[in-house]
Structures are given as structure tokens and as C-alpha cells.
Length: 139
Image 1 (spheres, one colour):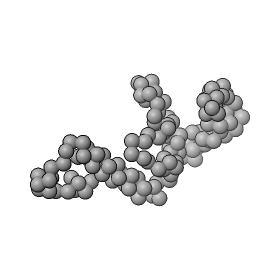
Image 2 (cartoon, rainbow, N blue to C red):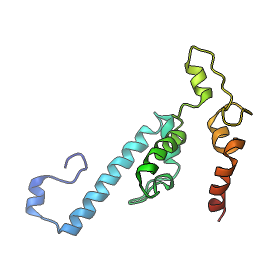
Image 3 (cartoon, rainbow, N blue to C red):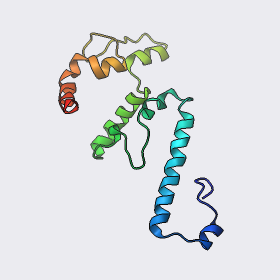
């Protein structure tokens, strides 16, 4: 209870809140604590910058994570979050960390180096996938 600054057990015993008030108080305290934690870590981890573009709201879910959660979608979600945070190992990044000569050119289209920008926005092999998503975004 000290972590979320909810008071002492003795205070709660003396002044017991209703179930609804207690639930609201706990939700706000937990949300506030973790929002502050992420805000304090953002300057230290560049990968958190993109997750903090939209401030967290109580009960608000990032658009990326607000999909219906299925087993198939959970595997896709790992890739999406890694792309969003910049931790996905595309060929350009792999080349910089590898001692062997790796060709950084995109295997799908063979046109440009495989960077996050190319993978998400420019790859001609993914044009049809991107177009189906853009229709929903433009609405």
C-alpha cells in the first residue's frame, strides 16, 4: 500500500471506504504511479519515446494495442511493438552488429536498405498490405 500511497492499514480500519470508492482510489493510484514511472524512464530509454507520444489516460489503450486479442494477433503484436520501439532487428541494424558481411538490401523488394522506414512506408512488396490499412486510416 505504501508503493501507491494508499495510506496505512490502520487508517483504512478507522475510515473504511465503500467498495466503489476504494476501487476508484486504487485504480487512480496505480495508474498515476506507473505513468510517473514511465515518464521518469523516458529520457533514459529512447525506445520509450514513441510509446509516450500520446499521454496515457485512465483506461486508455494505445491504438496499436487495442486490437482484439487472439493467439494469432499476439504473435503479430510482438513484431509491431518491436517496430514501434526500434528494437526489431532489420537487416541494416543486423549488419552493424554482425562481424560477417550481411547485405542490408530488403529481401522482399531488393530496392533499398531494409530500415524501419522502408519496411513500413516504402517497400513495394508490401504495397498491397499497406493500401488495405491506409483505406481505414484515411476514413
